[in-house]
Image 1 (cartoon, helix red, strand yellow):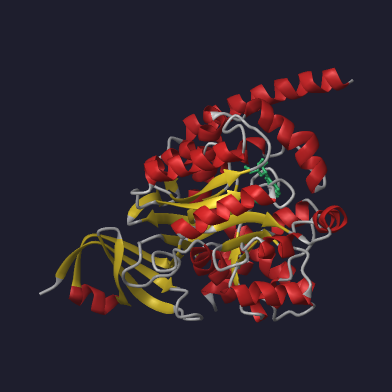
Image 2 (tube, helix red, strand yellow):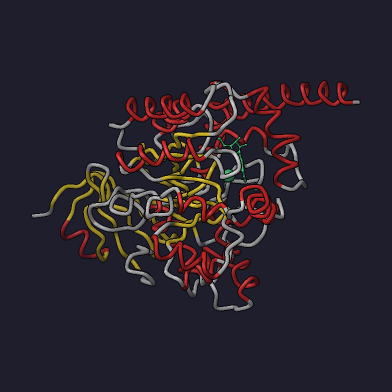
Amino acid sequence: MSETVDLLIEAGWIVPVEPEGVILKDHCVAIADGRIKALLPRSQAHEQFQGEETVRLPDHMLTPGFVNAHTHAAMSLLRGYADDLPLMTWLNDHIWPAEGHFVGPEFVRDGSELAMAEMIRGGTTCFNDMYFFPDIVARSASRLGLRASLGMIVIEFPSAWAANPAEYLSKGLEVRDTFKSDPLLSFCFAPHAPYTVSDDSLERLRGYADELDAPVHMHVHETAAEVADAEREQGERPLARLERLGLLNPSLMAVHMTQLTDDEIGRVAENGASVLHCPESNLKLASGFCPVARLDAAGINLALGTDGAASNNDLDMIGEMRTAAMLAKAVADDAAALPASRVLRMATLGGARALGLENEIGSIEAGKWADLTAIDLSPMATQPVYNPVSQLVYAASRDQVSDVWVAGRRLLQDGRLTAIDEMELRERSREWGRRLEKAHGEYKEQQA
Ligand SMILES: CSC[C@H]1O[C@@H](n2cnc3c(O)ncnc32)[C@H](O)[C@@H]1O
Ligand SMILES: [Zn+2]
């Protein structure tokens, strides 16, 4: 007697990510109530289970959905607004003035939904966001069916979202209270960076993070200038300051980390913090190189993120994996550094672990949520297939992502978004472009 399940997905290759290095040919995933019930050979699956629906993908590989571990989703509306600049000029002279002018609930809703559509198309099933109005991002993610980790942000300057650090914290906690029962949503604290958050705010936030057992998501050691300024002005490196304040622990998700001494790598490893690597943003802003091969060798949990679309300028996790792998080899002067299977692990289970969700997502294992991505390997660009993981990381493009499921719900079917009106979304985005361009012109005239 076979058991009825909601969905059976057959794929030419399934890469569960855990155990590491395993590639299963002609296997099948059985899904019930949004979760993975079993992963087993195709013939066995049809003896054991009867699917309400069966999806056959003989030319595809199936992987865990990608976890984009560092985003500012709404910044997709600032894609191409200011390019070819170093971090602090980009932020101080362009991005922060534009955010001061335009960021509000509608900007965040439209920008985040544009980002979510792009991420689903590219195989991302979960993103870890740091931005103003996390309540709006939460509502959109939940409505569109995408998994999200929302940052309860803290920054010392006022914005349309909050007037001061105390209000950032109280509003963030209120958002968490409102949405915490939604199985697609989780929450972390998100102090922006060492140079924009005071000791006092970090201490308060750490108290809440300990109490709620919540992760802490922060830009850390992004550039050499950040570290040099802190040494000159405070007599202390930012990472040492975080350690002094009790924040260097397994809850910390440190983004960028391009400036690290051997001793600091040891401290991060010993304290169990995760590093969120954003290679394309680091390259574009010329911020520096994160020593991922050394971090990996030290046993540090690594995750992968795109950063916002204004500094990348896309939200393409397949492209990001390829850049991460290539760059790691160049930085380590070692072609064996960060092999394809390792970078896929970073883009899936590494992100899940950083977010404290390693028992829920990040690999294709019974009991986890059915967050899955199918990539069509039949196009010329990925033929012949000796090793599907090599094809994914070194040759495939995001256009080859055909299907995406989050908690068993199909958000992308044969390359089409099922829950998003793409034309309407494009029109909303164009309208924001017109508004920003007009204001940009007026601002430039005032400056002249
Ligand atoms: C407090 S909301 C997030 C804040 O971060 C800004 N931001 C975007 N990208 C970066 C980056 O690479 N380093 C530092 N800050 C960044 C974004 O514009 C928001 O103001
Ligand atoms: Zn960032």
